[in-house]
Image (cartoon, rainbow, N blue to C red; front, side, top):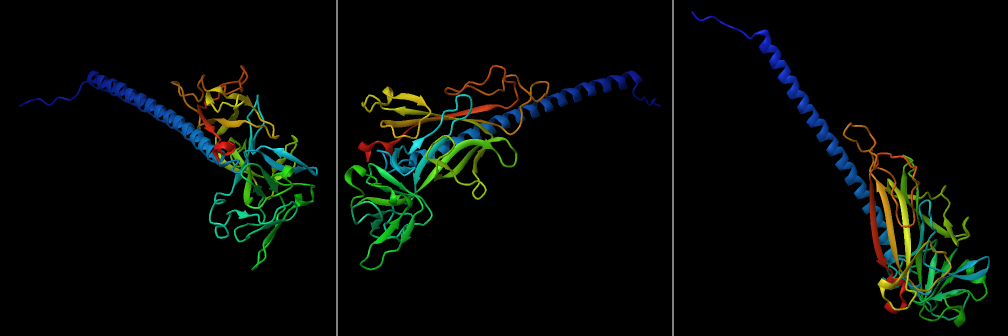
Length: 348
């Protein structure tokens, strides 16, 4: 008969030790893999946030200034003042902001049919504007009256519909301002000028209403001087709160490119940070810089939630303080340069 024999104590101990080593190695691989996946997802998240925010900005910038390469006349304190369709403040130690005057997307649509399409001026002069039709005009919006070179911005618009044989009327707050029009040097509006609705759009960095994290925000504007003395300000946030364009965006920097030599050569543009609202000829391009983070902190090899290199980054003329602490948030930078064909009269 053969004698049955089990495992010795030493064999059991060796087996347990080997099993523990294998389990520990596998666990370390799982933890390392989880950390790599977490960090990769975080990095991709920040890339997506910066790209989506930047593209949203660029889409609006492409439309801005249509019909107003020579500036926009607005009323400030009862005085006609010419401003740019694009301007913004320089936050050398913080984020910039950007104001745009953007036409209704259908402003060149079928006249008198398409909502938001332009109506034509049929009588010259200043004061109340007479137009060929009013079906496509929408009360409540600010309006531009444009000769495709300069424009006038109208507020508090009241529309009197047209009737057979009688032109419609566009009344507005600025009609009481002496000589106010899109071409005051010509004595007022001219036959053939276009009247169409626009939006005053303000981009800035602000806290997310739920998380409090910095985000790219967009607010509609109104013709009211803001705290910086600029002609536009945000509508009342109590009735129309700003919209979150993209969360986890911590920095917006804008540079403005001017054709100061008149050569129409982008290589010779001069660039500046910040642009006052007063009309300055020669604006031909903008450079948009957006810095975004992921939603969560990255982990290092010890699985702590902070990496030493994860700090705010320098962009344009913005430089973070040298003493700023690492926070574990990876930064992605979106940078695009865009020519402004709407502000080049030769391209109209």
